[in-house]
Length: 196
Image (cartoon, rainbow, N blue to C red):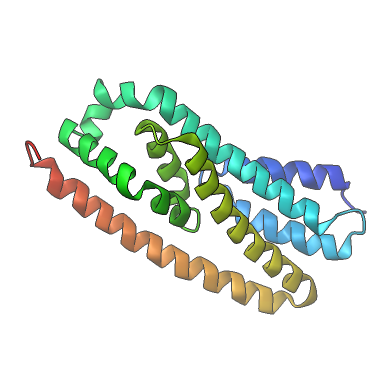
């Protein structure tokens, strides 16, 4: 018995959007599975799988960006947020986003965990919305195109697709861990500074 196409599209869209709030949701796996099913289930369209995943993920990221714009700064200016970032660390973060924020937004879409945090801080540091949309949208389009391709391969050769997805996940996962370690080191080393 086949699942209705509408239900598959709905789950795909929800998973792709929710990943921006709760990173453990395996949105990438949903996309690969949806693309794979589109080869075998006639009512599913590969273009729809891509569009639903892409639009939902970008909308989720922009939702997180919006929350950062409207609620992030007060969180870091008083209360518990001050324990995470001191005033001078916050100013450094703002300067970083002013200079390299678009590059960070683009690259973060390929890194597990970072794709959640980077749009939040883009909002907190009040980056302009249009360039944020372009950076997130273009990177997500590339990423989901790759995942759809993996899904098509999966429909034809499951072992080859699994191997390809494992290579993607391992490569980007190792890179994400290295960047997380560097960020933690930078955060810790800058905690002792009083001013810039």
